[in-house]
Image (cartoon, rainbow, N blue to C red; front, top):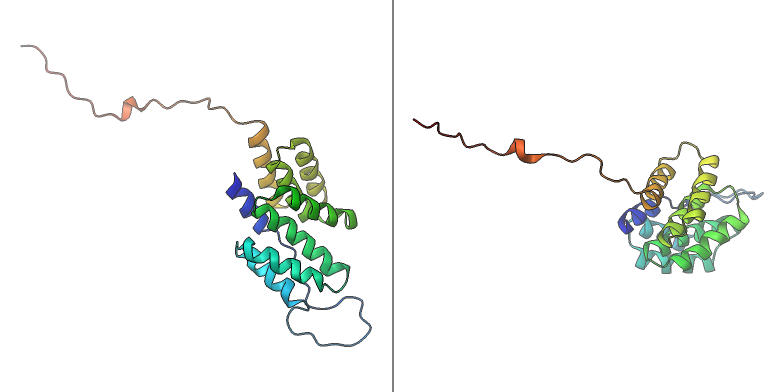
Length: 175
């Protein structure tokens, strides 16, 4: 289950914005504006949370505006989850959702955090909220499946009789 959590978190990093928003000055920006934050996101996407989290923390220190701060905290939420530090991940998820209650990816990741902490009611609530915001998200569907596996495990109802597959030795008839 931990591997599934990591893989889902890796798939939900916030995208880095290449261009500043709301700027009245005409600028040409080639590549990401915050290269440290970008490098942190790339490391996290590659599954290297041990490198990605420190880079993201450094990128957060030089973040330019609320958009980059939100990206950094969203990525830290996923990164700390990948490291198995669920309580720390939760702090970063909450930071994002306190500022942007419509960030469905963070609801997805926080649902994973709650799932790892066995806080099932809160996980279910975040899945529901995320699905309201992004009803077609495959990631949220997979997280919901993980949630259902945790709270309502499927009992095997069918057993397979392997005896038919065994080679039968012909019985000799008595003379």
